[in-house]
Length: 267
Image (cartoon, rainbow, N blue to C red):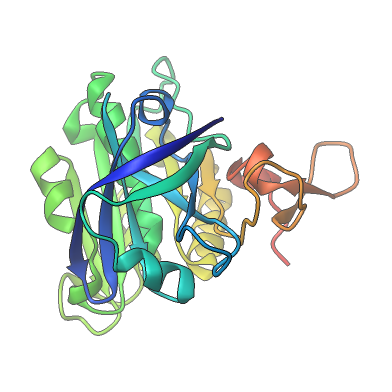
C-alpha cells in the first residue's frame, strides 16, 4: 500500500447523487487491480475524521478514478472538490478479482448494481487487455430506475454483452437482475460460466444461491464499512467458512474484499 497526495483532475456527475472523481497518481494507479480499493481522506481536517473506501473504476499509468454515491458528510464533502485540489489517498488496498485464462469456463458473467458497478467495469477492461473476447464477457446490470444505471453506455462501448433490469421497468427487463441472469442460465451453458459479482447484499445472496444451484464458481466483492483499510480496526469482519473448520471472521479490507462465494457465511 502507498500513501500519496493526489491532485483532482476532474469531477463529473454521472447520475442523481453519483459522481466520478479522477485523481492524478504516479504510484497507486500502476499497481491497482480490479476489486481492490483506495482509502480517501475526504477533507484536510478532523471532520470527517476517517477516510472512506472506494473501489477503483478505472486506472492507467498516471491516474485513477472512483465512482461514488453521496450518502453522508464524507461523500458530500468529496462532491464539492474542484479540479486542482488535493486529497490524501492510501492504496491499493485488499485483494481483487482473479481470472484463470486456462480455465475451460470461458464465459465471464459480471453481475452488479449500484456502486458495485465500478470494480466490474474495471475488471471488464482488464479482461479485454488480457485478450478475453468481448463476446465472452456479459454484464448483468440492475437498478431501481434507468437514471441509476451506472456506466451502462461505457460498458456498451467496450463491446461486451450488456443485459439490464430495472425494478420499475423503465429500461430493460422489469424486475431483479438476478432473475434476468437466471433466465440466461436456463438457456444452457452453465458449465462454461464464471461469475463475478458486487452490489447490494440481497442481490449477491441471490447470485450465490444460483451459483450453488448450478455448480458455478463465483467470486464476490463484499460491501462493508471499512474504517482503516489495513486491518487494524477490525471493523470490517465478515463470517467465512473453510473446509473442515468452524466458521471464523475474516477481515474484509485485507483478506478481501473479494472472496469465493462458497467461503462466505450469509446470516
